[in-house]
Length: 63
Image (cartoon, helix red, strand yellow):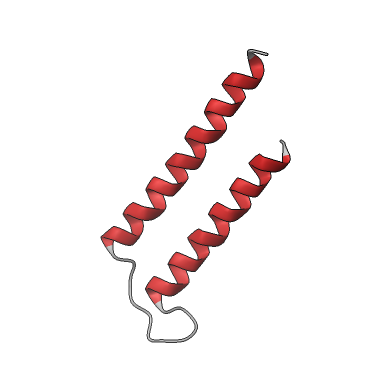
């Protein structure tokens, strides 16, 4: 795994945690469940990351 791939995964994890904590109020407010658009944004970001990794691996194997 290259540095750019590790950076993308770490950023995606950090942003997912930020969305979860910010949306649910975990730790600083009364807990509320995730809303549908929060779940949608998380799914889209992880699909984008998976596509990036898949595309990069496919291009790396063709070198």
